[in-house]
Amino acid sequence: MIPFQLRLILVAGALLAVWIVARQIRKNKMLVEDAIFWMVTAFVLVVLAVFPGIATSLAQLLGFMSPANFVYLVVIALLLWKAFTNSAEISRLKAKVTELAQEIALAHMDEKDGRTDRESR
Image 1 (tube, rainbow, N blue to C red):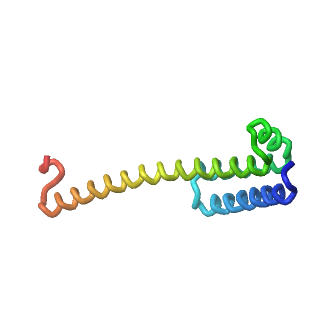
Image 2: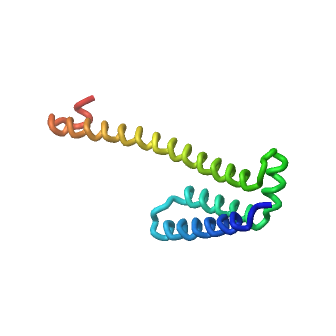
Image 3: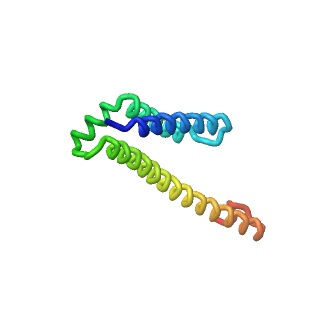
């Protein structure tokens, strides 16, 4: 069985996450994709806290010593997945920024030379 304190922390953390995400959405500071991830994560935490039998059963099935260890693993796995997807997105955006900076630099260079885009080709 998951200790009552951990169940309380899971529910409080999930409610806090939902409140923060809702606030960020209202301020247009968060994309819908990210908001969905955090809402689903909060929902999973609430389900594990309200129905501790799920965590207990899965922990026993997978060979964990304690359901709390299973819950920690689930949270860590979710956060690692989010870090990975954020890293991939940051890499893609860095490449796009570099490409756009190069295009702007070429456009400014053509303007300095007094050429139009057609004349430079």
